[in-house]
Length: 200
Image (cartoon, rainbow, N blue to C red; front, side):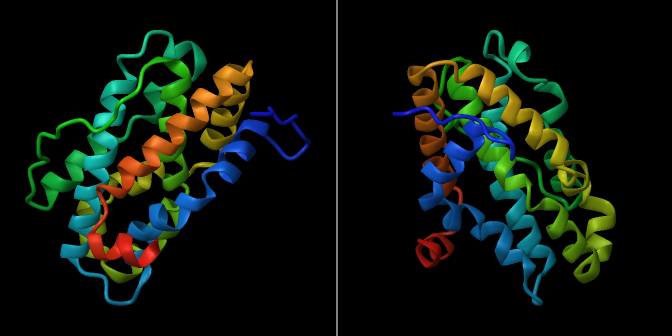
């Protein structure tokens, strides 16, 4: 795989990831986009939180076990699963123990999976504003995840810097890209069947 060169617009590795994984993006975004309609309910929001927890919790857990990950990126400041759990409990739902679908090792693969999480969170600011208008009472008690992951610009830039640094060879870049593809496929497994089929 040829490794692209950086340009003035930002991270070359993020550009590679966005281009190489574009076939997954519609399905990956469907869960959040479904909440942007006019008929949003508490139950639909709970379903979104549960599915997001099912995807992100195993990944965050595994990322924290990777030796050297903190030398590549400030992982601790990106952990948000605790907020997901507190939101679910505030709505009367106990987060379920999840069998991990996150299968990766090493910093390169970990960053590939983290890219998929952070890419999805880029929609959270828009989603938060919409839900504050539609279900303000629910968001007032269970909006911590959206509120703490809504401001993404700096984190996205820092992720790009980390990716560019770690993708120091063709082999490393390929590991990141392949891991991102696996993460997107795992994400599809947490989406409703009808949503996935409609978005595919």
